[in-house]
Length: 70
Image (cartoon, rainbow, N blue to C red; front, side, top):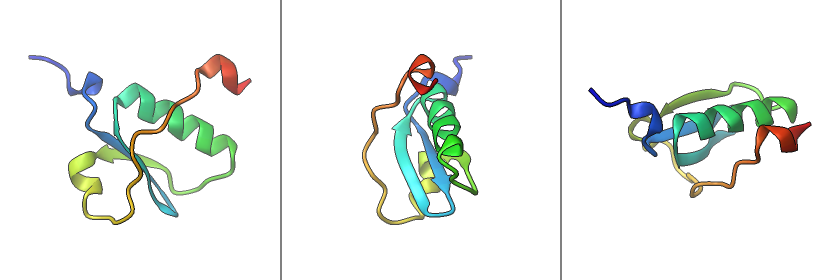
Protein backbone atom coordinates (compact mmCIF):
# COMPACT_ATOMS: atom_id res chain seq x y z
CA UNK A 1 0.00 0.00 0.00
CA UNK A 2 1.35 3.43 -0.95
CA UNK A 3 1.24 6.30 1.50
CA UNK A 4 -0.91 9.32 0.71
CA UNK A 5 1.49 11.55 2.62
CA UNK A 6 3.58 12.20 -0.50
CA UNK A 7 0.57 13.00 -2.68
CA UNK A 8 -0.32 16.65 -3.32
CA UNK A 9 -3.70 16.29 -1.66
CA UNK A 10 -3.32 18.20 1.59
CA UNK A 11 -4.49 21.66 2.65
CA UNK A 12 -3.72 23.94 5.60
CA UNK A 13 -6.55 25.68 7.42
CA UNK A 14 -6.26 28.53 9.92
CA UNK A 15 -8.61 30.82 11.77
CA UNK A 16 -8.65 32.92 8.58
CA UNK A 17 -9.75 30.03 6.35
CA UNK A 18 -7.81 27.90 3.89
CA UNK A 19 -4.18 29.00 3.63
CA UNK A 20 -3.08 26.65 0.82
CA UNK A 21 -4.05 23.46 -0.97
CA UNK A 22 -2.48 20.84 -3.25
CA UNK A 23 0.44 20.31 -0.87
CA UNK A 24 2.27 17.17 0.15
CA UNK A 25 1.90 16.43 3.84
CA UNK A 26 5.51 17.56 4.43
CA UNK A 27 4.84 20.89 2.66
CA UNK A 28 1.71 21.34 4.74
CA UNK A 29 3.62 20.57 7.94
CA UNK A 30 6.27 23.17 7.02
CA UNK A 31 3.60 25.77 6.27
CA UNK A 32 1.95 25.12 9.65
CA UNK A 33 5.36 25.58 11.31
CA UNK A 34 5.94 28.88 9.46
CA UNK A 35 2.45 30.23 10.17
CA UNK A 36 2.76 29.29 13.85
CA UNK A 37 5.89 31.43 13.97
CA UNK A 38 3.89 34.31 12.48
CA UNK A 39 1.33 34.02 15.28
CA UNK A 40 -1.43 32.42 13.22
CA UNK A 41 -4.02 30.43 15.19
CA UNK A 42 -6.34 27.49 14.57
CA UNK A 43 -3.94 25.70 12.24
CA UNK A 44 -4.66 22.20 11.02
CA UNK A 45 -3.89 19.94 8.08
CA UNK A 46 -6.79 18.38 6.19
CA UNK A 47 -7.29 16.79 2.79
CA UNK A 48 -8.08 18.99 -0.20
CA UNK A 49 -11.43 17.23 -0.35
CA UNK A 50 -12.31 18.55 3.11
CA UNK A 51 -10.93 22.01 2.27
CA UNK A 52 -13.20 22.27 -0.81
CA UNK A 53 -16.01 23.19 1.54
CA UNK A 54 -14.33 26.56 2.06
CA UNK A 55 -14.09 29.39 -0.46
CA UNK A 56 -11.05 31.41 -1.59
CA UNK A 57 -8.49 28.63 -1.58
CA UNK A 58 -5.15 29.89 -2.98
CA UNK A 59 -2.99 27.80 -5.28
CA UNK A 60 0.03 25.87 -3.99
CA UNK A 61 2.43 28.21 -2.24
CA UNK A 62 6.19 28.13 -2.25
CA UNK A 63 7.18 26.69 1.10
CA UNK A 64 10.54 27.81 2.50
CA UNK A 65 13.07 25.25 3.65
CA UNK A 66 13.34 24.80 7.41
CA UNK A 67 16.87 26.26 7.26
CA UNK A 68 15.39 29.46 5.78
CA UNK A 69 13.07 29.88 8.76
CA UNK A 70 15.90 30.34 11.25
